[in-house]
Length: 204
Image (cartoon, rainbow, N blue to C red; front, top):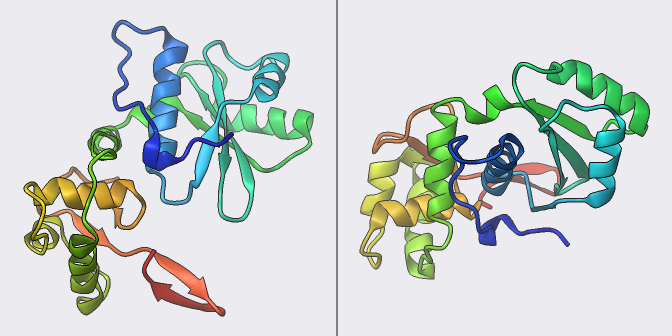
């Protein structure tokens, strides 16, 4: 059963007080939970066994992610062990599939990605009214699909915490944000695009 990113329970990850595999799994799952391309994800006993049989680095973890057009196996490896590119070549050869992504600890834990992911995940349980969602969406459509976080929040009328409401919409996948920049009122928020009859249109 795939876990929906919108209801994923984990919100924090830290190497302090956790086994290496545990916090790396947390980091990977938080990344999958807020990824705009991931519909759901799950752990998989068979993939775990295949990863161990492939002599993967100690502490490596694997999750199976459901994307709109395929199923992707995602492996996270600790820093300082087998390079992610080398492990991917090994796994592609041994597993006979190229639907495989290998990421390393440094990529998952780097800033500001880590802080942005945690902030979004912490907002997942926040429910945004349909009225506020329509107001924010209309504002973005009027402005070419993107706007500052602070300006988007100003269009939230019913919620007592407009910024959290906008972050919750991002966490749900209705909006997008740039993970490569620190979170602030000037962060650029934008509508996702989708294909309709061969054309790209704005909106989730």
